[in-house]
Length: 285
Image 1 (cartoon, rainbow, N blue to C red):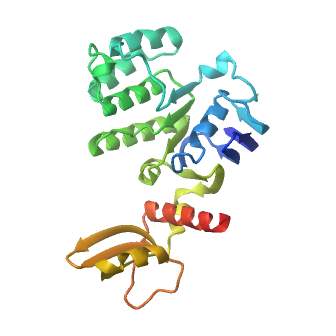
Image 2 (cartoon, rainbow, N blue to C red):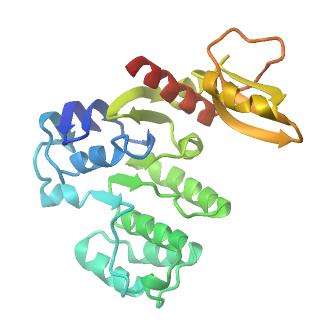
Image 3 (cartoon, helix red, strand yellow):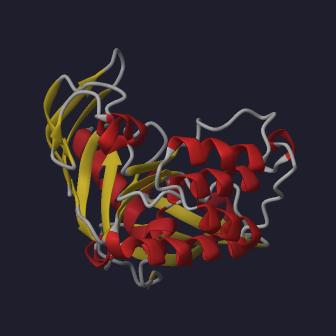
């Protein structure tokens, strides 16, 4: 288990303050808008930055830079990190084999075929989706006990996304997996637990089912005139709209007692996530 107790990190224009437990044998989703603090939290876990206060425990190691033995247990896929664009997948293969004693050469080779990653093509010629797949593959190819995946589905098409979800489910049985994303549907497809960050604070931590339930009785649809839309948006949190001539069908959030013309909807994870963030914002204001 990874634990963060009363951890605080302050920058000039941003402050992160959180307590969190990331258990073994399941996938924990770290979800929040860009700038919510997800990347800072990951860097704290990895020992890349030091907390101003609080305690972080990673495989029994508390605080400071992680020792080499602990680093060997961690597989990381960060959006801003990667190999030189002049490298090929074969080059990456050889680098990983030297870096990690437990590097699984056959597994890496097999997944290159499954993920359709050409071995001799330079990375600068890879698409965004191909680069994303390679980052994840490098993270999972050395029997890591902890996987930290930052925005792993960025650039993937729906079919590749589904393949990735299935792979993660297989890997989660004996590992700690932290999946950081701003896409709520990613955590619904893969995670059993979620932590939602907003403005450097954990505003929800718990089972996915509980997060989903937050939207119960808060999501509606109604039809209004096109010229009423701006005024409607000022009163309610509009999730989506569908225009049909002079009419607009709106899916929206509301705490108010439903009006006769509103139709109650079963919330999706996106609905509940948006409701949670909207409620937190109102409390802060």
